[in-house]
Image (cartoon, rainbow, N blue to C red; front, side, top):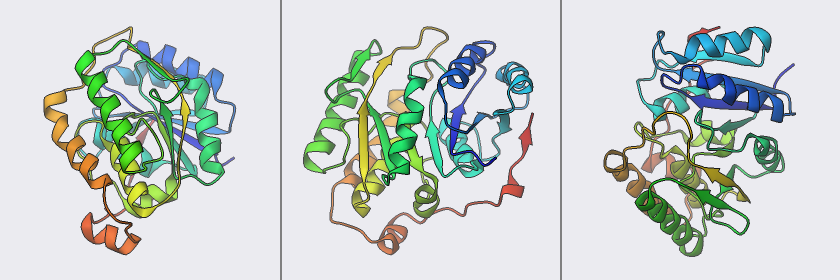
Length: 257
């Protein structure tokens, strides 16, 4: 059966903590789904634990990212490898609420190209996390919503659902960090494609350490923040401004179980 939603989880040496993450996702996602655990190295400590879950539930498979190390490349690879018409990106740290994956996917089924889980709309909340990062993220989201009509108050959140065909149409340029969520929101806004949001409660990770490096990732965020503002673009003009990458055939992907 072809899945209706592909859940992409970029990982880096999560060890046995991935088991709890996957158990929650498999329990809460009711739509026909595949869950791709995308890792950068064959010896990543996440792999044996994710594969153990996959042997019990065929929805889960580990996928070796060959685009280059880092979360942006892992997310790009996972979206390109997706078999479903909807892709949901979520993290392995337990910050995102897996009960909302189906709801986000259904918004895409209804016609939006980006569906965001929003911490900053009424009913949403962020619990914990670095104060400066939280303030900057909230400011960016609210200003983009107010002045660029971005369709979400939380453009920087990585927990989003995407129309797979839309992502393959516009391509992904980001190569570092987690700014893909902002990039795709920016492109949808400039193309005047529909973006929607639902409230979410984001909880700071309880296990492991965050690998978010604000100083390193900030230039990418600023690029897409300012790109969001501007006149409507046609797909052809968007491609001229930020050329889309070739989407490899499914045979190009190296997969492990």
